[in-house]
Image (cartoon, rainbow, N blue to C red; front, side, top):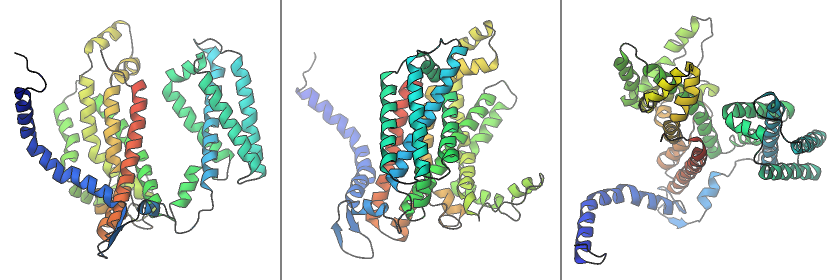
Length: 442
């Protein structure tokens, strides 16, 4: 006999279910939920162990994170607007490339309305550069031209979303991305020659704020490590997925660094990076390359940490990719063989699209893990955030310094929640983009 929602049997079974969950809820509440909630409250208080007093200061701790020891010569608003204009300018040139080449491919010639759009956009873009070069810095004419160009370009993009050359851009997403990066570098760094965009601003600002330096170093590390790790893992997984001898031995060998202690791994790499008798410099000497002070020079700090991290986590990412490859139905490849497809066509039209759910998962966990980098820095540089000038200071290391060394609990909690917001924002962006790019096998 079915029971209603408010019957005695319903409440008895509900109580039994919660009694089974009670031990887990209690452990999570004591060691997870309560610390998270308490640290959030603490981020709004001024509290350190050097003083018994603690009092509410609102957003004071968050403001202190971004407080600079001396002003930066570059205005943030000016750099932000320039960055937006450079990005839209790079997108304009990318669209022009596809517009010109659309008639040379299977796509038909775009409509004439786009010719007028691109002509007007180029005129605005050239005027923007002329005004900016004639009068560097903030000016009314620069601001007006910037806002007009941004508004006009965004309006046309929003109105004309579908066209043959735009469809070609979307179908060749990797080519579009590479062209966009190239054109942005040309527009922002070669044509401007003044260093007036956000990257230049953060390069200046990070020298006057430890927290901004931590953000800069962490993002630099993520950009170096995440794509490298994913690309190498995919290549190795494709090789291990073939019918080769000692396949299981190779899988185990690649996975061993991941289960090895971070301290042990970092100590071994500390010896390998030694500029006098290290193994890496010994290999470089075979090619007549001068010795590199891996652990002493500021410019090599983040690349050094990225090398260690990629080597350690490569095996784990490879195993996940390998599982994704083995989950693809072999009938797709058999049908491709019948149609005469080569290896590259199989990878492009079968492997890569069907591997997108695995790639999406790996990108999420790899990015989150990269933002939490700490142990390798602490061991490689013997408890210091880099060799000189805090060149290895990351967000987690910043939280550690404020909490453990300076014992400023409020500032450390605020920095931890800023790290949480950054990861949350990037994860949200990845999920939004993943809805259009991830293809699940039906």
